[in-house]
Length: 228
Image (cartoon, rainbow, N blue to C red; front, side, top):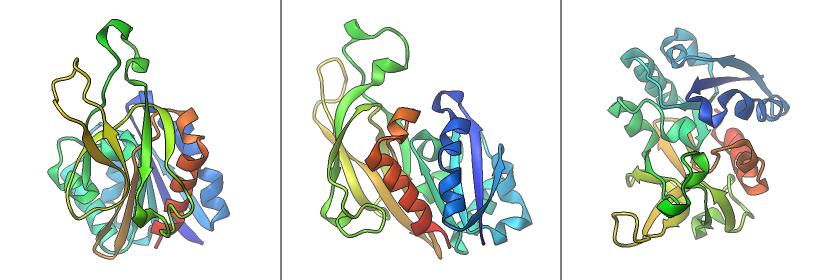
């Protein structure tokens, strides 16, 4: 059996417990023994050397330098790392070492017109397209998945060229926002770090988005693809 570590917690708005619970049966069905923890400090443990896959759903929060160093060491040695939305792309904002490892950091998401905003999370729920790229056509995470529409938070992420981008999304430039042209950002990417594989799927704000067939398929496939 492979060893999977699920690290969940941080901001409750992304329902880290319920969201990760959705994928535990898949991990077990694909031959993983699963350990679930509620702190990133587990990354500092010596036992990380035995972990084949990390599934992280930990929005914002903090991780010690020792924890981030342990995570980087584990992935470089071959441990896979996957996650979705803020659980991986908006974690540990105060750690540049973590941001370099992941290859993308949430910056913002566009909102509805101010006259339509009510002050809750739905202010940022907009229809948008996840555009699958040619590179996605035969990748194990995305093969057979066509571009699709969502109505949810659209992540604007800051990224670098080490990422292998499988899908993008283009942000509008409405007059109530300060940017002046549309911006295209990665929406799904993989990243090789030493011997380890990383996969980030940016959709996944809420449980209904995680249930979307294309989103859920990519996340489940990423677990198999990244696992050592």
